[in-house]
Image (cartoon, rainbow, N blue to C red; front, side, top):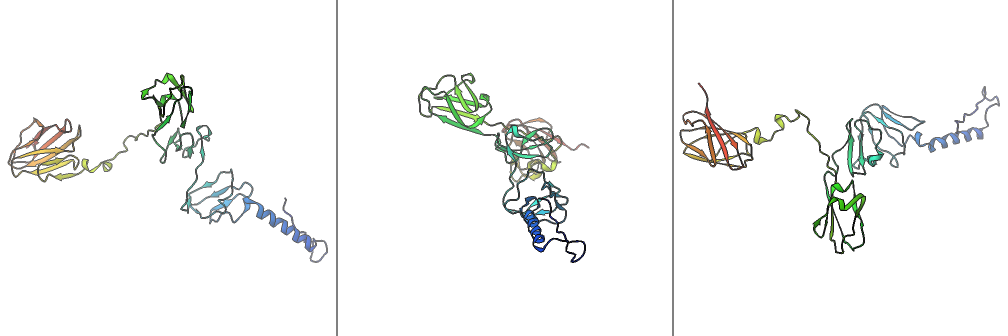
Length: 317
């Protein structure tokens, strides 16, 4: 309905304007249309400065970092885009993301988020490709068991599978070659009916694993664990490779060191003083001689978790 305007005449009491009943009938019609118009329902959004509503399309535009506090009846349904320049949802509930299959993905723009019903996981678009994000199911092994009857060749899996290459099938405990069955969606079809048995068919299916790579030069020294960045004094004769990177010790007697928590390839440093002899259990000296009158720099390399090579050096004059 077009807006109805009350005819108030040319001058006061000239008798050319609308009668009183006609005028208020127009008022009622205008208010009825206003309150029936969801796009113009001023009670549906409570917001402050910087938020505008397009009365024609219903699009809500936020031009500042405001807060959309409440909506009535979960808000009006619209297919229009809502542009927000900073949004805080003041709620203890949840935000429902768009959901759809691989084939229903929109024209992608970097920063898009959605729930993929094909993979049952959240995904985002990085400007190049779609990929799984936090909250996704990740890698998963799903097991289905069926009972053969000697005639049935098609069984329904509990989840959709890309193809037989991501499955392993066993009948009566015997692995089945991939050319003896095929998989389309949730249906697995055998070329020959499996024999009769109770739960004698086992199908293991695997979801696709999204592997994220760490960008170059992203791991800094500050991100390393304490066993690679700290120094620790050896209290007795045990050097715990998981405790620190650098160890110190002043010998008070002849000492045999034992090493714990070593992994292949670990390299640790020991600064040793004291005019006594020392040795390392399962250790092989490859260079240098210990001098108890000065500080000795001893570098220990784990050949295995229980065997070690080490070298000894001193400050050069």
